[in-house]
Amino acid sequence: MPTQIPPASPFSYSHETLRELAARVLDLARQGGASAAETEVSEGGGLTVGVRHGEVETIEHNRDKGVGVTVYLGQRRGHASTSDFSADALARTVDKALSIARFTAEDACAGLADADLLAVSPPELDLHHPWGVGVEEARELARACEAAALETDARITNSEGASLSSQASHFVYANSLGFCAGYPSSRQSLSCAVIAEEGDSMQRDYWYTTARAASDLDDPLAVGRRAGERAARRLNGRRLSTRQCPVLFEAPIATGLIASFVSAVSGGHLYRKSSFLLDSLGTRVFPDFFQLLERPFLPRGLSSSPFDSEGVATRDRDVVRDGVLQGYFLGSYSARKLGLRSTGNAGGNHNLIVPPTGEDFAALLKKMDTGLLVTELLGHGLNMVTGDYSRGAAGFWVENGEIVHPVEEVTVAGNLRDMFLGIVALGTDVETRGSRRVGSILVERMTVAGD
Image (cartoon, rainbow, N blue to C red; front, side, top):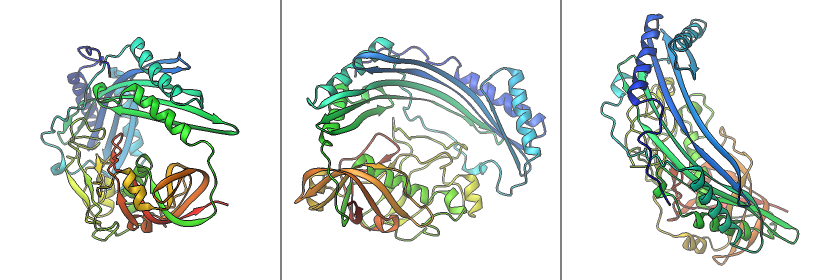
């Protein structure tokens, strides 16, 4: 990707200024009678340029800043926020948080994170790579991406456009236990969506690339071609008769299965007893070849972080080892509800990695032999309490390890507990564009509902 020399700083406020603002907020909370307090001060901004049919459709410059403060009056909690950094606004915001706390019921689990879990010396993770891209360069990159998509196949007849975005932000989190730390980060992305037509058939698909640094983005022409190929290959899809068969979830879709698992073993669902994986710690939830690793310290990782949103130090851990669940995803509040300790996951997970079993995508098709390859899911048919799973789907029918024809308007259904245990292979085509890194997932058997 072409790059420009970044400016000395993409921010209006220095890191030290954010620290001073955080200290001022904590002082105001203390003066107002708070027994404990925490605050996050942040600033961010960037540029997004959208192009359609070669012409600029949108140019958006954004600049955001904010202060959030949470105060505790014993076990009573109050929260307020503002986008105004003036002294009067900070004082009013703290007063609002204190007022809310006074009218809130006591909660024995409310409070700051445990002091001994807070990060002491947060490592540098190389997360900030400001681009400094201008409107003209962004336009040309998006235009080239869209043009490549439109030229991929004669059946690509329309475009929803291509968009390039460059964002950067920084923050400081501080609490009355003495913790105060923060860091800058950036995210660059380029996406394209096009429409293919043949006869009465019309299909849309897209592709995108995202990274911390512009130099790590995929080539714009490759992104465009991938979008075009994906749209064209879906034309003239057929329905299927209802059957049971193996199902292969393409890598970008497979990340959703891992997200559902994370949700099922996260604190909120567990302490509310609304998860099909209640009391599953130490039990087998996947086949014995399955591992799920959390690695928060990957340089330039899209979900890397030295500490969570409460200042708790993150750490490398094996969430699932040899198919057996080793740990939950907990923040301080949910951990206390469960009689456990925070796992450093307040605010989410950090770079989950599912190592492949060794098969590339072609080998997964051969292993499946005959079944459904799913490349798109529709709707939200998941019952977290029972694990029942039913989603609208589109993709391709596979016979003898070869793609035969596109498939549309079908439903894939099963139970997530059975689906997880029924995984037979994990592809080497690992999806790296988010917080969950996993290849295509082959499930031994599911119900495919159609005609």
